[in-house]
Length: 237
Ligand SMILES: Nc1nc2c(c(=O)[nH]1)N[C@H]1C(S)=C(S)[C@@H](COP(=O)(O)O)O[C@H]1N2
Ligand SMILES: [Mo]
Image 1 (cartoon, helix red, strand yellow):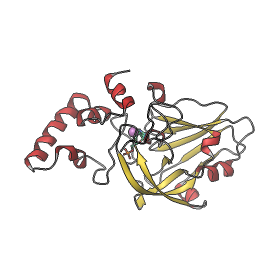
Image 2 (image 1 turned 60 degrees about the vertical axis):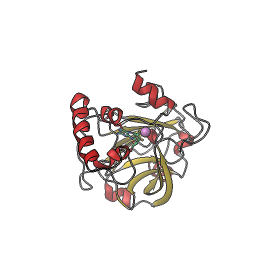
Image 3 (image 1 turned 90 degrees about the vertical axis):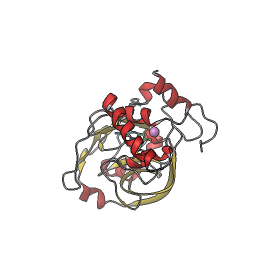
Image 4 (image 1 turned 90 degrees about the horizontal axis):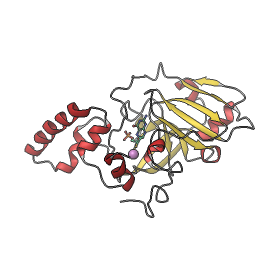
């Protein structure tokens, strides 16, 4: 594990440089961060709120991406492919998703590094409802999620995926999911740490076993229950 990964695993709040590093910007990102920081300092804003001047800011979330650039998909050209061990593989447009029963829920969003956004509104298709449409085959035991960022992946057991608080979300914070937050459609796994809530959802595949995801191959728990995983006894504040 790198120092950065180790820090994340311990749940110590990360500094701006670490977050910028996660943006994949490397030295250029740090340089931008430094100049942003100077501007914010001169405006007498608290340094701790520097994140608010970065994309997707102002809503309490920090923008995370493991790649430098993610292709933009509009609601008009978005497609979600659902396949693998299902009876009826299907590709869903936004209109297809909107025609399915919609689930709304309000839950805290908790990153394993320690930041939390309280009472976020989410809406979309509950994953069990989507699974019912394609029909899960008897041999399926798990679900794999892929992102159209081309790199990030996640997983759930089939039992976890059938929870009603796991949502294929087209709305968050009272509007469409923005590009920076993983729109047009992202996953929201309410009972687990933020890294399970894959952004820029492109594919859902039913598999015969759990295929571990991006951060899970880097030491994070596959079962990422908030307060009961990654070495924590209590949900961080
Ligand atoms: N595709 C993709 N999804 C992702 C991530 C990512 O880097 N890439 N980061 C995860 C982590 S660690 C968190 S905390 C949340 C952050 O969501 P946000 O960028 O909307 O704040 O997205 C999760 N989903
Ligand atoms: Mo996270």
